[in-house]
Length: 263
Image (cartoon, helix red, strand yellow):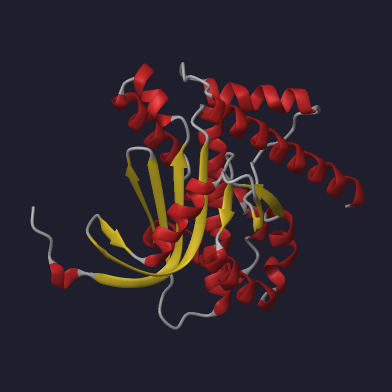
């Protein structure tokens, strides 16, 4: 197959890199066909209607009239074995509120993907970046793709974080809109994220959609079940990720309880 070099496009936008944890063990005990079918099924359940329902409270805001068009026309998803990459490109000379709408949609999509993959038993770790990238057909290249790949692979837990380029762009836009201000505070906490080198990094993190367990023991059991589901084996590397993921979910649970009390 020949690629049309003249068709290469350069875009600026948001890039999400998601790495499926335990996928090698999954394939050792399940068929690759089952794996790709279930990943595709998970992603296909996150359609424009799902997202529109999720943010129905904002329908009175005029910029949300572009919601379906942006999600259908400008979000792209690519799956390569244990990797899911999502792109949301900016349009030239668009207003900041429309750029923020893309961030809003991307965060919601990322949280749904993260949560649904966890519930299915294929937890992911991911990173979200921002910048220029080039594409032609199914080929993509660009610095933010490499940066998100590197950051995701450094995470010692199942979580999805913003890298520096995403945080810088997001922080430059978010103060410009009162529409999103409180909502972003609610859905995008900062957390001291554990890395493979035994260090931590304070980063924006996506929420898990549901953290309703009442005790730390219940949360740990749920995390362990997701990591070992589909006959996956648990090694010392996974034990570390299970512990760190449990701590992260406990943080989200306590934060949710605090916000409910202090309204």
